[in-house]
Length: 367
Image (cartoon, rainbow, N blue to C red; front, side, top):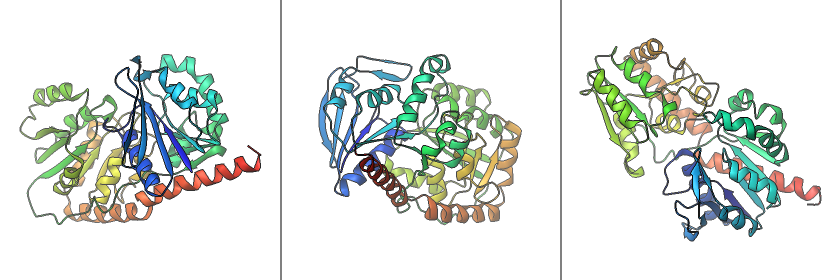
């Protein structure tokens, strides 16, 4: 089978969608499929390379607007392809439009990773076209049932949607024996973007004198949040460590007591870091956004779910997890949940099942 993944960026660009595509593409190539990833290069030049068995085409871009590459080369490169499956990763309007207009592939699958949240004025113009694109897709993959229920874009095409949750490597992320110690070690991992809600977490930390917070990751909000931490006099208990190599990331989870993802917008559509934390045996505290965060974290079982932007509720939840017995019980439940529902194997098999279904349907229609 020839599979073509279409998106804007790929490794070494860091991001949840970029990492998901890389894991999926490399696993598909290892299974014997012919796999192409078509993205945009940071420069105006188009490059072809092979990375771990995956043919990667990075089409030259002219510029970037509203977080989207503008490229004439990418549609041209797409036109030259004849895949069995065109797998578009959304939100990415250029890719969605190109895939719809050019009709490449025997079948088109769209993974709807997230609604467009911030560019609302632009979205009003794009909305009618996006609805047509979603209706024309052979299948839409959603990463959680909650997102289908709450997305204004997915609800009208729910009959076309299949849930395939993201997964993590449970061999890489494993629990550790925690030593008895004073205080509470909190951990956040992720890109430092506005919707991650770290301002709420920093304010909640003021009310937790025995807690320390480690922030792993970098991004556009880092300087602002470092300034906020200083203004709240939290310098001694908040540690910004920046990006860390993938091989070192599991150890950061093992050193923590509680993982916190205090996101405040639907742009946090799933929360793979929650899976990494749960696989590592950590209880998780996250927020109710109507997305995958409160589906992954079962309130009172694998962690606690609080309203977004609520300093008092977040502080109270973290204070509740001073109880080591409760932390250990939630950590065990989280690990078991990941082992059952969120492994890489289940994710890869789920995507493959979607491919097989849509190809059978396409064949029955004589396409």
